[in-house]
Image (cartoon, rainbow, N blue to C red; front, side):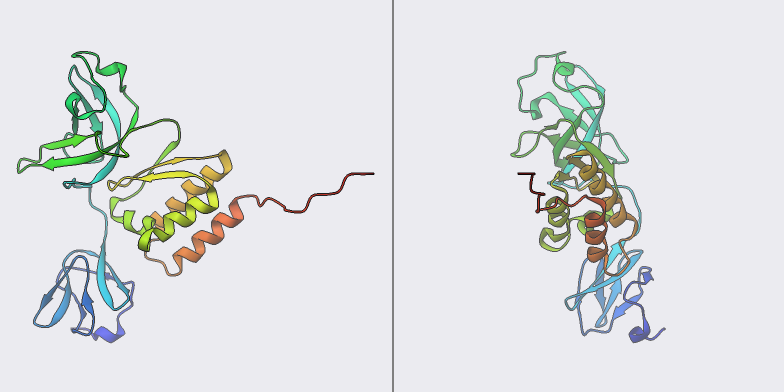
Length: 237
C-alpha cells in the first residue's frame, strides 16, 4: 500500500483506496473500515476543512426524490408531456402536476416540444418509474434564455460552498441563472454577459479538479465583460 502522506490532494482514486488513516472526517462517497477512510466510488480525492471526500467521475444522472431539475419537452401526449432530463429512463409530466387546468388533448396549448421547464422529482419507484411536478414554488416554464449542460456530478462545484461560486457568476454577469441537479443550467442575460456566464460554467465543468478554480473563474469573467467607466468626459462649454 502506498504512503497516504505522499498522495496528491487531487488524485484519481478507485473504490477501496485509503484516503486517510483516521485524522480527518469522512465526507461524501467515502466509508470507514478499520479506522481508515476509503473511497466508495471512482473519482477525485478532495480535502476541505478537515473532511476528505470523493468527486464522482462521469456517469448518467439518476433521479432522486426532491431533486429540482431542468428539462426540455421532447414529446406531447393527450394527458402527459415527455421530458428530457438526462435520465436513462422516461420522465413523464402528467397534466395533474402542472399549475394550469388542462383539458384532455389541450396539452400542446401549454407546453410544446422544445420548451424548457423547471421541475421537481416527486418519486422514483423500484421499477425506475419517475413522477414529476411543476406545482411547487419556483417551478415554472423558463422563457427565453439559453441552456448549458454539464456533468451532473459537477453541479455542487458550480454552486460552490454556500452558493459562493454561482453567486459570484451572477454578480459579475448580472444574469439570472437556475441550476438543475441533473446538470442542466438555464441562463438569461445580456449577450456578452450571458456568453461569459456560459463559458465560466463550462470552465468549471472541464476544470473541476484544478487548483484555484474560483480565482481563475473570477479573473476570466472580469476580463470577458467590458468594464463601465465611472468617469465621463466633460462636454465643451
